[in-house]
Length: 133
Image (cartoon, rainbow, N blue to C red):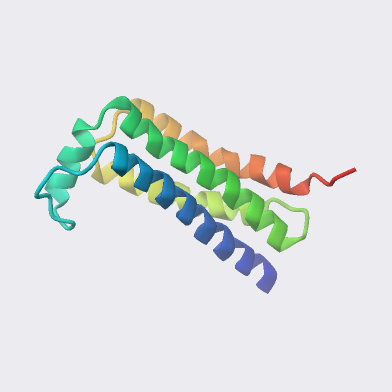
């Protein structure tokens, strides 16, 4: 049981790092407006609303990479061959994703992909089960 809890924590941490890295790259491509303060929620909402398609899509790419890596790491650490740890990681991130989409102006395609992308934790789970022949 402790191993499964650690697996979930590890999956969440590694996925968070992946998402952060891709979103950091995204902010380099599409920087914040000059003078925007870090805690300015209205300014951030305006920034998100005016992001071009690729800027929004990169967030989904970050989620996809995070989901895949999260499922893989959680499965490798849990070492029980079951998808439980990977699924829990996916649910944790799904909750955060839905929260973010409710507070930020996101289009419908972002909602659809933002929810569906977390199924990729199961692809990470399957990849973790593959053994070299």
